Amino acid sequence: MRDQLSRELLNWYDLNARSMPWRVSPQDRAHGIMPDPYRVWLSEVMLQQTTVAAVRAYFQRFTARWPTVSALAAAPDAEVMAEWAGLGYYARARNLLACAREVANNHMGVFPQTLSGLRALPGVGPYTAAAISSIAFDQAETVVDGNVERVMSRLFAVETPLPQAKAELTALAASLTPVVRAGDYAQAVMDLGATICTPRNPLCALCPLSKPCKAAAMGIQATLPRKLAKPVKPTRTGTVWAAFHRDGRVLVEDRPAKGLLGGMIGLPGTEWDGRESGPPLALDWIGAGEIKHTFTHFHLILRVMVGQVSGTPNPERGRFVADINPRDFPTLMQKAYDLAKGSEFALESKIGS
Image: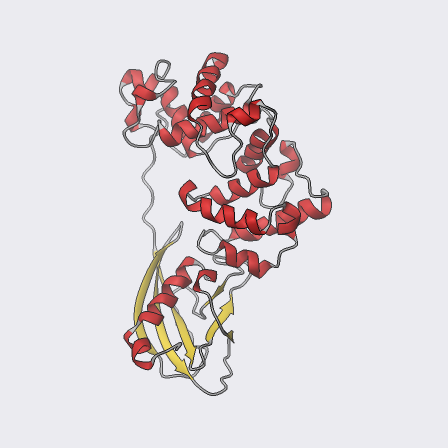
């Protein structure tokens, strides 16, 4: 069964593989062209909790600026974090640098090929290690993301809800992973889930696995995989202060290395626990409004306060910088900055002009 299913899926993939800037096509692989492990690793880290459409431009900018793992390892932290801004889940960017430096400094710029060697790298978990080993080195490792879980749950009609079904779905995926063309097969299953075996309205008539699919035979494919109800996310609150100097500078601070938005530049603010603390400067602060943002585990509402500065201020926190590029901020801080700049107070006072 494994050989037949993998053969059918690989035949489909040869004709329908998605074109991605980090991917080597099945035709090129057939001619001996292997993927660059650096590009595979970088793409997999970027794709965690992020869509392919959102990642493309970031990946192209990263690889144009830092074309090798050694080049990335030598990059200043602030530049990498600024380039990452907007992708979210900023711990990934910190782990990205730690991993790049480990590979550059202790592995002569060459990624390990084995699962155990990859797992020993900073920030490389089971999924990422399996993906690199399989896609970059054609090792017969089992790569399981949300697309693969969906395909397996339907193919075998697994009605156990996620996340309880993860181990079972991983075992089923492993039972189908071929020894030959393992990297292409891993990408084929993910492409099938992304384009044919979609969460809603799966295109079963176009699926190369429609005949052996148990869920399709039972007519329950659209209901799988089953999922437990998600708990209601709590809402947290806080305040940020946007201080604009008459000479065009803006008050910013570097967030602590650990925690959400760790290591990123942003506007000074309170903790997100509802407790208020004093502003970084004694100014006539005016409320610009509120912004809302959703993280993985909670919603956040931030009150945005705006103030104008002249003279030579001495802030208790942060530093004034000129020529600020809002794109260097994480998305949350971009929202706060845009609200502050666009507020009625900002317009009346010509802040930042």
